[in-house]
Image 1 (cartoon, rainbow, N blue to C red):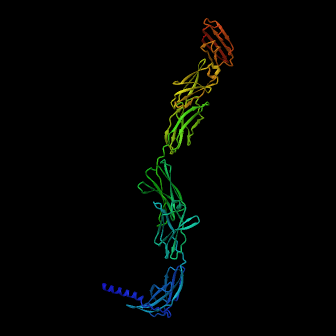
Image 2: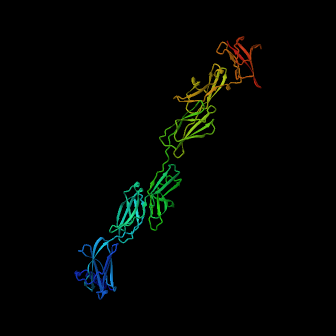
Image 3: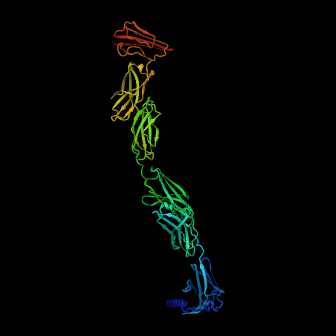
Length: 581
């Protein structure tokens, strides 16, 4: 077809349309056809029907229809060509929210350049109100963006009169509007005002509204979800706790854990079946691998978006190094138990302090573990009268790893032996700890002497028999007057030999009587005698309590003999004694 022919046809159609709007009759007192039937449905659709029985060439007739809401201004809303049906019909979809609307029509034939109007219809007035609820749309997802804002997502409403959406928030029984979104093609909304605490306490729903602001029923509620990172700081494991008051997506199916690396990228780590709460446990997490986690909820519904939880970040830091733990002293009590004195500045958190003990340099064993460290602790299982007890402490950080080990402190072990008729010898050793400047010697809790640079002391006593049960102990004293006490020793009968013959005797001195010393009680037989160098007996007795007073004896050397029997056991001793006057 030539271009000139196309232009001609277009001009003819344009003039025909223009002619439909020109020279219309407006006298409705003599209508040539009637709107035979018309009504309005509850969804706002008006059904028009008109009688065509008065038109000879109906297929050549055009009908133009108008509506008016105020009865003054009329607006064209449709034009149709007539058909051979008994009645012609037309539906008018109009947003009418309780309005009275008037309808009328025009009939005419279209010529080449003009329309020959045949007449006008009668006027029909209808009360139109849209009472039909729009079809609801499920809220597909409630997702948290990286910036912490909440994103709501849904699909387009299917109701033809839908105009927009309302996002609702519900707290308990209180339901209120969060946002109103105009425009049926707007399918998401981002809230920037709710903080995390507020959002986690709410349930969110969606409504569709139409041109009359008639709203659909509420969609099923969705919730914001949260990811909480629990990290023990020891680089052992990371627990990511996912929680939500309900699903965050429509028809939830799976949960996926994402970890954010330091470059900002999120990588999927694990996927599990959906649950409103779940704990992802990550073992042996590389300290520099992840800085944050979030959980994604995936829907089983086709075409529905997934939703992310809040992001919880964390920083992997080594546990703080505790202050040093010190043993400041160890000291032995009368009963052989040991007091261990400690010192710790606990201003820096620590995991525990463990105390170790060894006996006479044997292998160490842990004997106690403290969360709260006492200033003094009593080792009531110790018997430091028989062995040296060594102690040291280990302080562990909050991960249970050793942070510091104290110095070793060892108790002082004291022993006592008879070194002569009037001498009880004290000897000590094994102490380890602070530097000892000197030693204090005690008898019956009374200080009797102080010595330096020695590990023994001879206690001069009037008579061994007179000091049975007397206790002795030694204190090692530092330059700043800290003291560590030894165990206690006592001179008891069992310390004495069966028979001991002193080597000297001074009748005019302190000791007036000379006799054997030893276990001389409850004997079956006792015989003690003194001889001069010529072999002449000058003293003899069978009474263990009786001794020689030195009579008949000049200064010089004498021979002593003693014989005892207890049951079948017989002991004999011979010694020399020097008499001094």
